[in-house]
Structure formats: structure tokens, C-alpha cells
Length: 84
Image (cartoon, rainbow, N blue to C red; front, side):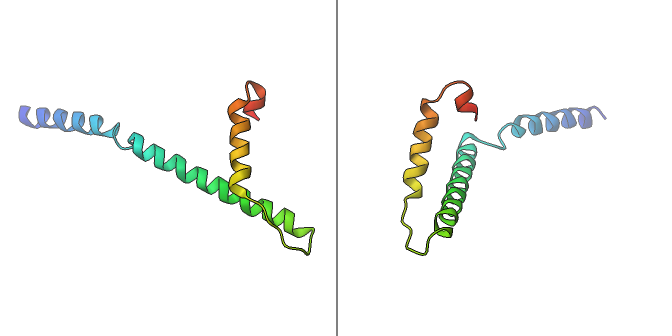
């Protein structure tokens, strides 16, 4: 019976230690990049939809440039401005 208790405690310790490693920093970085890509795509499609709806002419813009400009603005923002 004592062996089963020791084995159970060992198993619980192993599970507890490995649970913290489920999301490694690399996994978190990949998830953040995935979220950023989805947000950039959403920005591009929404902006295209708005720009193209009012005109019958060709529309040309760079979603990457706009996203980069927004990220530079956010980097320079402080306080309430950064939170909005």
C-alpha cells in the first residue's frame, strides 16, 4: 500500500511539473504572431470594403504600411491614449 502512495505522489508531482510547460515561450510567440496576422488581415479586408464601396474606380493601398504606422503610433502613445 505504501508503494502505491509513493507512486501516486510521484505521478502527481510529475504531472504538476509538466503542466507548467504546456505553453512554452515559443508557443506563446507563435500564438501572438497568429493573432497579429489575423488582425492585419481583418484590417485589410475591412479597409478595402470601405474604400471600394464608395468608388467605381480601382483602389490601391498598402495594409502593411497602415498597420506599421498604427504600431508606431501605439509604441509612442502613453497612458489613456495607449489603452484606447
